[in-house]
Amino acid sequence: MTVHPNQALLQDLLGDGFATPEQEYQARTEDFVAEIPQTGERMTRDQLYERQRAFDTPPQATLRRLSGEGDHWAAELDIDYGTERALGAVLVQFRDGHIAHETRYYATPNP
Image 1 (cartoon, rainbow, N blue to C red):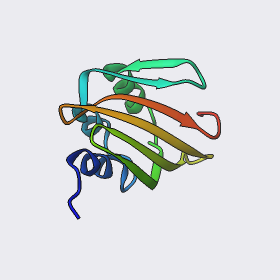
Image 2: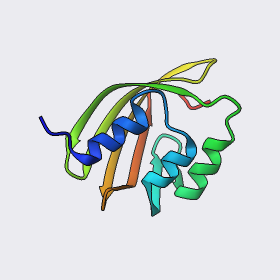
Image 3: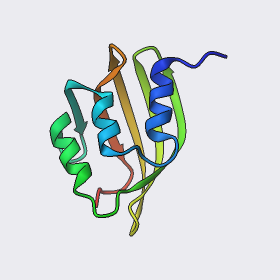
């Protein structure tokens, strides 16, 4: 079975913990936007990069499920912040082999 390039990219970024902020930054388009509807947050690629770099100890994730095709994918994650755990779901939209948009949902509040 052939793995779609967008699937391979997400598996690399989410498959064994999280990728570094630099790796994630490079995987996103210049006009990337991440939205978290639960909090009303909307972040650009640069804003998300700075937020990720601010963690003293970055959260660790386990990819539970990845489903999709072409330019539209959904990932289900177990996230460990060190002091608490959360379940996350991320809807991902690609453009030209890069992540253009993410919508993130969390089962528990972000720390």
